Length: 238
Image (cartoon, rainbow, N blue to C red):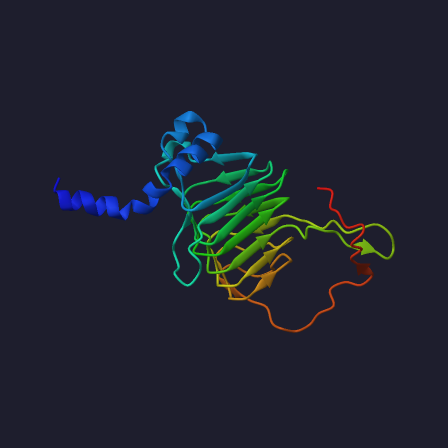
């Protein structure tokens, strides 16, 4: 092989080589040996805050090098800060290829279950926090600056007595495309084969046929009464 070709391949893989030790540690920490040796998970500029819980890859017969890429620079308009990862005990399942770009965050609670379907992609500034359950089907793509969050991190007090739950699961259908700036909150559910417009916030199940374009307007709607946040008593028990 010509030296120039070798140098080109090394140059193309420089980002992988720079943080290869982080990737090796991460794979062997979370995966069984026969999977970890293939280095299916590659990290770029990782900030690893908490490494509890478990990670599973469901496609055992198709596990390959770099099938899951976290933190690699995809969009130059956002900071090239890699990925922040914290898992306080939950379970993350990858069902195939996954790419989460630069300036992104994954925060997993002690009892959370997060599932990424095959061919998941989030270009940059993707923030996911789960303390309950987030299920993402196959072929889902997120544009820039998205937030997926199944908890409020607090509960609301009811004037009639008691509290609201403060968290709920999220289910995202297959072949969904989310424009930039979307916010997907607890209770959200989307049909398969949908486009979600830029800046949309979803916090309820979407009732729409497949192959729909989904968005929301700017009208102010009173969604509930008889609730308030008591900051002296708002801790959630998951």
